[in-house]
Length: 166
Ligand SMILES: [Fe+2]
Ligand SMILES: [Fe+2]
Image (cartoon, rainbow, N blue to C red; front, side):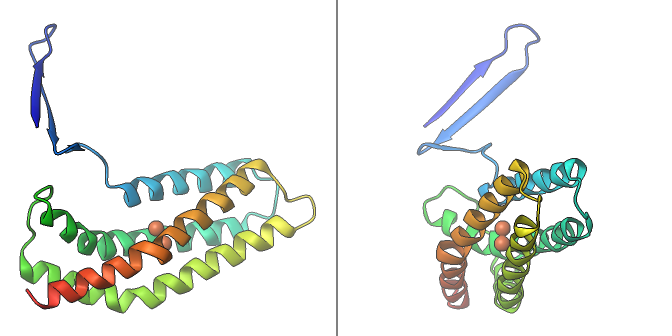
């Protein structure tokens, strides 16, 4: 399904494409959540009266971690979207490189999930350290990491196998 509309005021044509219910302009969901988590981390750092060193460590680990996932897992998972005609079909050489990178990086990313949750858990247990933003951040980070480990990493491995046979 496609539709378009014209903005009457300045004549700008705004195209809204709806293809099988999918909005072409929708942000990639994992990347969006990384942005939200990073902004929560910055807020927590600014508002915290705690020792900031662990939060800065979490921010540094998470920033590299998010880049790693967006550079490896996201392109590999994107491959599934081409099955339903919703995404463009990426070139095979690119996909094979990304599949190899994902398989190499996955153990590192799992380790980073543990490190991040350990650091946040330790901060939450510190005397007087319980703050709403920290609790929200920790719960959101845990949910995000669990979703990746439960669904997305296994799916990405499956995509890698399919990419191998291209
Ligand atoms: Fe992530
Ligand atoms: Fe992650």
